[in-house]
Image (cartoon, rainbow, N blue to C red; front, side, top):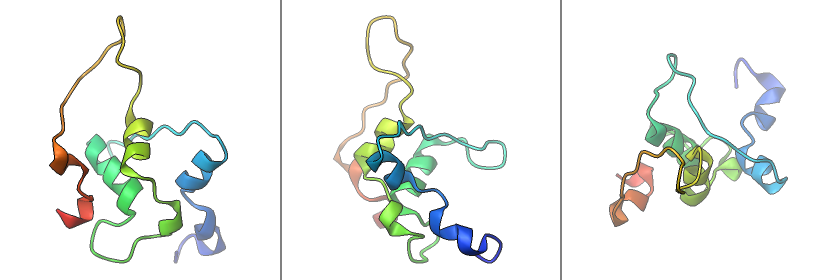
Amino acid sequence: EKLWGDRVSYAYPMKSFLDAGVKLILGSDAPVAPLDPWHTIEMATARTADGRPAWHPEEALTRSQAIKASSRTTIDVGQPADLIFVGPDGVIPFIEL
């Protein structure tokens, strides 16, 4: 907020994009940010990583929305896929882990 000034109110408007019908794709700024997709999903849903209050929580995605936005393609014949299976604990809010 110190560097962005008034622009901070419309930075990373992920929920607003979805509400407007934009196809949202999450990714990474590697090598300056973690390449881990779970970190990206955590940031999109919790919008905090260090116990501080969530940054513009009205723009947070649900876990389902974040996972969908992190998925490159569909599971279908001929599509490339790396599959993992996540149990019930995989949907506990990251901030609670």
